[in-house]
Image 1 (cartoon, each protein chain N blue to C red):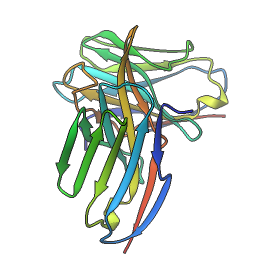
Image 2: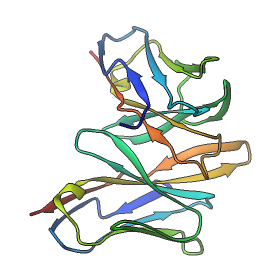
Image 3: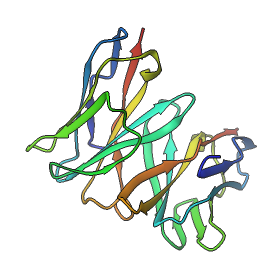
Image 4: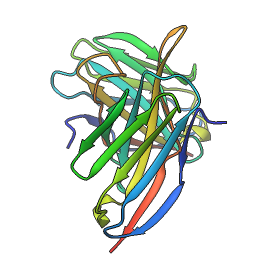
Length: 115
Length: 112
């Protein structure tokens, strides 16, 4: 158990809908990272927040947005969902904000299925 | 072409064998991560390297910055090592931090 929690574990929804994925980091960790893992693209970095502020941005679509709240939990919002958005979404947390030096602890993931 | 390439894609070996998984990257990086993804989907960070070599138990990771290449070795492999091993490179671009760029993974099966 990494100490990172993600809810829900599974989510099934329809095209065009909007969903929110939630992540609670390990106690004491200030950074939250979001990743998407699909069968064809593999793992892709979406976005990083550090202590409430956006720190780095990857291949995140404009239909997706994220935020980190004062209690450090984070939410990833996915809107106007398409079939291709079906994937495993992982969040990870680390103590600091440096991807080059900080160990990341991964949550169990949320499996999103868009029908 | 993916910026991070792993080989082999799939590897099946017998228990006790020495395993090597390779990772090559095409851009200058600040650090390289090795991750393990279990059959159930969970991901664990194994190593972070910016130079040299690191060892943890039966796992050894090396990196050659000049050749843009890293290897993950498993000594005395065991069926519980069966997993997908993923390397990921981190670099800064002109616009700031980019986050991790991932290889496609190496699917390792260790048979008893």
